[in-house]
Amino acid sequence: MDTRKKFSILVPIYFNELNIPYTVPRLQNLQNILPEYDLEFVFVDDGSQDNSLSLLLEAKKSDERIKVIKLSRNFGSMSAISAGLHYVTGDCVGIIAADLQDPPELFAEMIKSWESGKKIVMATRSDREESFSQKLFSNSYYFLMDKFAIKNYPKGGFDFVLLDKQVVQELNNINEKNTNIMSLIFWLGHEQDFIPYVRQKRELGKSRWTMSKKIKLFIDSFVSFSYVPIRFMSLVGFFTALLSFLYGIFAVFNTLTGNITVPGWTSVIGLITFLLGLIMVMLGIIGEYLWRVLDEARNRPHYIIDEVYE
Image (cartoon, rainbow, N blue to C red; front, side, top):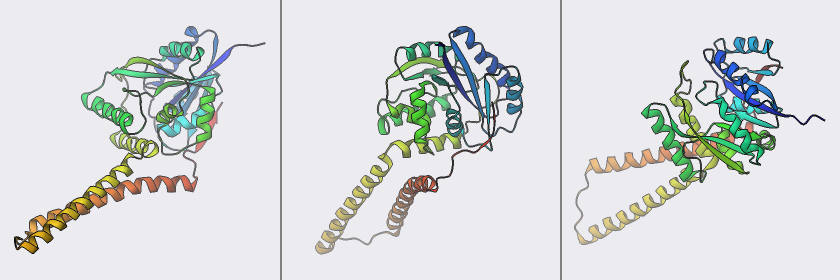
């Protein structure tokens, strides 16, 4: 009876032609570190417009363990990971980026933790070799996630993770759009372990993780896991109404006592524009929630698979 276990490694790919010649061999070298495991490599091409797909198909010719999934266009890294999770077949599944900022060799330690019974093993960033602005955005995001969305969320965040096949099945069953899969993994609970590491500086290629994508992920995370924006609007509305009521009493009192002065147009216009701006912000927040409800109600797939190379 074959008692060997299979370890699947899922890698989303987007404009990584410079990284692939180094990423693939380094992942393949894990077989020497994990000789008791059968390895499976699942690469998801998220609509890359460079030579990423051709390089992956070339690597596949010499390694039958490689699967390549081609999406019809760019749907985003979260959708690419979600697509790949439907094609992994391992007893445990590792998710890692293709740019080698996360050391694949750390999977050996993560698997030991999984073998001890942990169903989710997260490699958390104790530090990162990145610019001050990138650190500031990331640290602020994870701080807010911990305070207002998911309690005890890892301080440095994570997207380098190892999952038990049960967790993979649960994620596939949820099939939620416009969300952060990493936050969803943490939200699931289960027995978890955290392994700190320092995220390396990117050596090759240019990151496609643009500010607009970061902002979308930020909004998706809070809309999916927090009611704080709605509660904030309720509190602001309450205090605004309270201040308006107190001002009304003040105005009536001064009118009755004859102490009222002629109001200035500047203060009136300033107050009106402030309140209108506040209303527009609130409508925008409500709109973010409503749009996501509409998107879920349409029941459109959040990715389209163009072709699978197995």
